[in-house]
Image 1 (cartoon, rainbow, N blue to C red):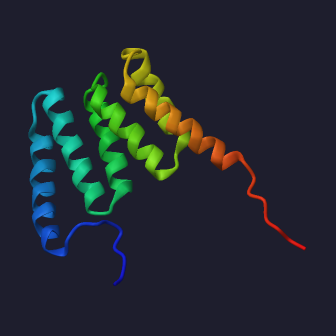
Image 2 (cartoon, helix red, strand yellow):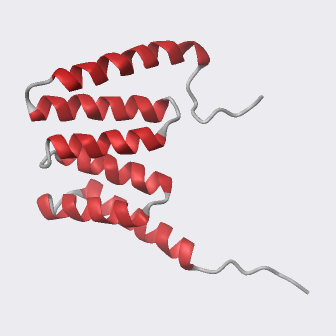
Length: 130
């Protein structure tokens, strides 16, 4: 079987695409920043599910632009950045979250994961060549 960019069953795709269009329209019409950010975060989740992490990244950035103090949006952006291998962006967003919630176990565990990912990337892989 061929591997899609997402694990979404094909029959669910049109439903998710319709929902995405509706959510993006609602976000555009939202009069309150917090509501707009929440809708944009849902849209980003749908975009990621539909296999478009680039769009999801841009949408999360829009959510933060709309409502800069939205903690969940920053955390979601950190997660997506980490998933895409953008460690610098992930670090920046996790630092933002840590400054606001210093006791957050969620942030601490993500920072540990990020440190591990960075260490793995820096460690040269030894190839056995004769």
